[in-house]
Image 1 (cartoon, rainbow, N blue to C red):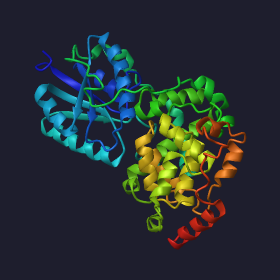
Image 2 (image 1 turned 180 degrees about the vertical axis):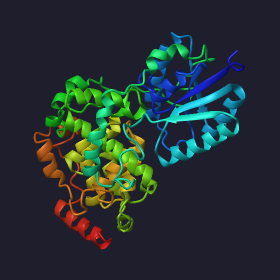
Image 3 (image 1 turned 180 degrees about the horizontal axis):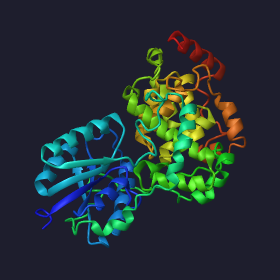
Image 4 (image 1 turned 45 degrees about the vertical axis):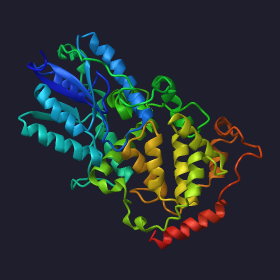
Length: 431
């Protein structure tokens, strides 16, 4: 009976896969049977239906894999602290393994749970898996963090070569999972979510990476790898993705992985950036925060096609092209002078690939308030951005049915006026 047999637990979080999973490999390397656990956290600040659908579908795939080994995934839902309290009473747990996370909420959560489990006599072991480099692995000579990307990237590129050979073969040890059958694999409805169809393209790095540098800025081209969701939830190993890009010499795409590591490090060292400016003077920008203009931005009705197409794409699919993310973020924070936190919060709900470190970093970059950010006086012109990156309106027409008709919105603000207003407002805050 599993309740009396001594077990180890691997807590699945951002690592929804059986292969090349660091903490899972460490857990399976022991002689003690391993139970896989996933918790749908009701007390997690980011908890949206589409994200739950992606997680659930990923877990169902894993469930089929582990059933072949006579095991099952233990699915729980509720307050994460209360769940762990019940698990301690339900199972004879020896050790708990999980891969680290780096957001203020998750760090605090994991610290509390680790303290609780250790107080009950259990061993808790944590590992790096979500990023290539974390915390203090890429730092200056005096052990302080880099806050400018270029020198960070130079050191990162030297060190990252080691990942061409690093692999944690957890897939070879699946036989060490506990002989455990959960009562039932719950339905999405029973978990409190509505089933929905997610339009997710197949990941094919071999097809996308060779032309990525040439085509990456044009949203009308099918050039994005669309791997960000899989990296966010760990359905694909970050190390495997890097190796593929390295073999194809996709340096621009690899630089994106470095930015990802960089922003995770920044959030770890400067947790206040979750909701405050890295450059503190920008906390004093006199935002207009016009609610009707924010609504128009959210709905893709600003009268600027590249902005509106991006927002409608986000609302309908949970995805937005990276170049367009920069444009819509600049438009909100500079043309409309709406607080970057409003936009970040909206993206947090809508983006299927939402990752706080990347999202906060990107928004503060566009706003000008972040470390190594675009200068406050650089204000993207959405019209020239559209002319440069969607010259034939292919992307815009895809998402704006009423484009070039009288039904399409007139621009809610004139560019030159908005640019001058933004520069003046930012400069008064000490920009």
